[in-house]
Image (cartoon, rainbow, N blue to C red):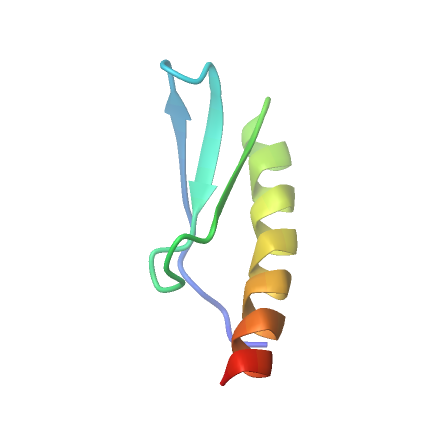
Length: 56
């Protein structure tokens, strides 16, 4: 699977860390720690790519 740039930042509004992948529209996740947000966005990336492959 291709590697993608991942942004991780703290959101005071949400009181948690947000991770997103700019190249994959709407692919993001959150977590209580940066590591948790990263783990969650990596799962989201897998699901995003699988769904994109299914719909072409």
